Amino acid sequence: MTASSGAVARADELARVLPEPPARTPGERAAIAAAKDAARALRAAFLDAYADAVYDRLTSGRTLSLRIDELLDAAATELPGLVPDEALLAAERARPQAAKEGHEIDQGIFLRAVLRSPTAGPHLLDAMLRPTPRALALLEEFTLTGAVRMESVRLERGGDGVARLTLCRDDRLNAEDTRQVDDMETAVDLALLDPAVRVGLLRGGEMSHPRYRGRRVFSAGINLKSLSSGDIPLVGFLLRRELGYLHKLVRGVLIDHAGQWHSPRVEKPWVAAVDGFAIGGGAQVLLVCDHVLAASDAYLSLPAAKEGIIPGVANFRLTRYAGPRLARQIILQGRRIRAAEPAARLLVDEVVEPEDMDAAVERVVAGLDGAAVLANRRMLNLAEEPPDAFRAYMAEFALQQALRIYGQDVIDKVGRFAATSKDGPPGGPQEDPQDGPPGSGG
Image 1 (cartoon, one colour):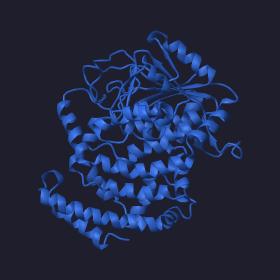
Image 2 (cartoon, rainbow, N blue to C red):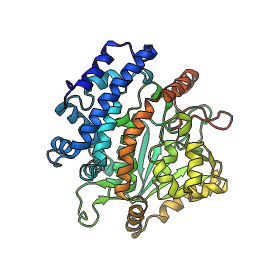
Image 3 (cartoon, rainbow, N blue to C red):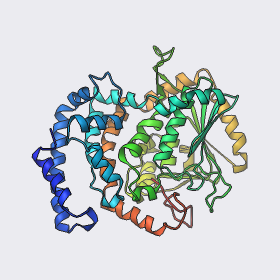
Image 4 (cartoon, rainbow, N blue to C red):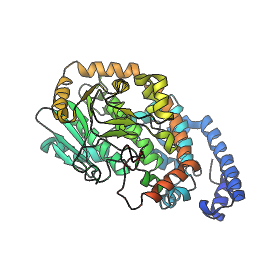
């Protein structure tokens, strides 16, 4: 398959000669939508038949461990027209979301086919569990000093064997963007790779945001301003987040080590401490932690339906915590769960008064520092989240989330949000300003 394939060439030619998406007439939009559909049907059919062969070609028979971005780069070079090349992606990155052509949908088609495969899919998941080059470059510094400060995450290791990951995007309520995803994966890698760390702790730092100045906040979820401006990529944010640091919190990091014959990955237990709120992606993080502590005045929410996107792997994980009815209320209807209400006990392990959080955190991390904890959490995770079930979910998520971020309803919603908040601070959750902070979600 090449860019000269008839359906692919017709779609590319229409995109080249037509005005940019916001300026197109209804007839022009219908014409290019039909052309893109035909090209995507061709790509999907090709990959349904040849996904394993393509993957083996790109990874030299699965001897190379390529991360999703590296795999897509190789596919663009080796098989022109199958996925967008760097020139197309660079042009897309320069545009706001409403003006993009949606080339990332073709990346979603490709990754769905690869992840569906029982041969290629597990190999790609393992590649994403390997430590990042950035983490490996920082590892010596961290093991020697016990501290690394990044733009959005502060990582510190004390003498008690606890790695404290503090989310410190204080001006934007820890709303997530590509910078934070990269910093979080780096920090998680370092905590897992450092032999002196036995337990990891995730907590939000004190905010400088005017409405929450001096108060700790866990996370406001996806940064909708970044989404509106086109700075929330499918691969670099939405998929890397799920297949990178969040999956590593569950499965650990894959690297050569002395006990590899019985424990293939380096794993550690994780605690999350929720101050203020955990919205969208913040609430998703709680679903992969071994113990969740919340202040009594905190709340959790997944406002995905309001934004029109899929809340990561929450649709896969939430029902086992909350049951199907409450999960649908939270995801489809945007129900907010306050830590003080009974339903919160399905999602958090312990609720304490805000002034007691520091002491409770220390007690909880000490309680997870036990010799049998690792083996038991590994077996729990295997039973609750079988690798093949996770892989099947992520295969469909890769495409469905790509389609959602280019949905007209999403573009309209984030565009209105950007217009109404252009003079305010960046980030923050998309919630009723009478009840909570202004801003993001996801």
